[in-house]
Image: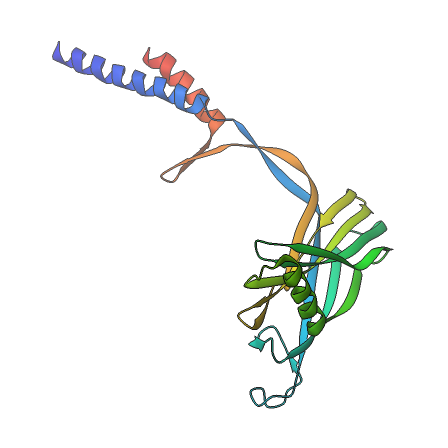
Amino acid sequence: MLDRRILLGVLCMLLALSACGIYYFGRMPTEISRYVPNCRYRQDVDFICLVEIKPSVLYENRTLLTPEDIIYSSLAERIHVSFRYRFSCDRPLENLEIHYWVDGILEAEGGWRKNFTLTWEKTVNKTALSEDYTLEISSIDDLIKRIERETEVIFPKYTFRIAPHIQVEASTDEGPVSEDFKPVLSITFTNRRIEFSGLKHSRPGSLGHYEKFENIWFFHGFKSTVRNMQYASYISTASFS
C-alpha cells in the first residue's frame, strides 16, 4: 500500500513537471528570425586639422600644431581644416551619386547661434570627396565680440562646428542604397584654449534578408530545439496522466 502511495506521489510530481514544461516551452517561439547581410557598405569621414600659430618660446618656434597639442588661443592665427569622405562597398556599384553641402555654425553655449554656408550643394559620382577650409581666428573673434556688444551677454564657451550633410544614392546587384550621414567637427574656444572633437566618423550599413532558424534551448550542456521540447512535454504529460 505504501509503495503505491509513493508511486502515485512520484507520478503526480512528474505530471506537474510535465505540465510546467508545457507552459514554459509553450511560451517560447519555435523559430527565430536572423538578419543575413548580402551587401555591406561603409561611410567614413576624417577631419584633418592643423593650427597655424605665431612663433613662440613655448613651442620652440613651431608654426603648426595638431589637435593632439595644447593650443592656446593667444598663439593661434588660423585653422586649416580638410574634410575627407569615403564610401566603400563590397559589391559592385552602379549609378552612384553623392549629394552634399557643408554648413558652418558658430554658437555660444546656451546662447545664440549663427549659421554659415561653407560649401554650397554639390553632386559627385565617385566614392571619395574632399573640401578644404581656412578659419581665421581673428575673424571669428571679431564676430563674437560684435555679437557680445549687440546682446550685452558674454558666454564662457564658444564652438565653431563644421557640419557636412551627405546623401548617398547608389544601385547594387543586391538592391538600392539610400543613406544620409551628418558628421560634425567641433572646435571649442574655452579657457583661452582651442580644443577639437569629432575628428573621425564612421557609419556602416548593409542590405540583406531575414532567415528563419530553429530556436535552440540549452540546459547545463544539454541542447535541443524548443519544438522538440514542446513535443516531449506533451507526450510526458499524456503518459503520466
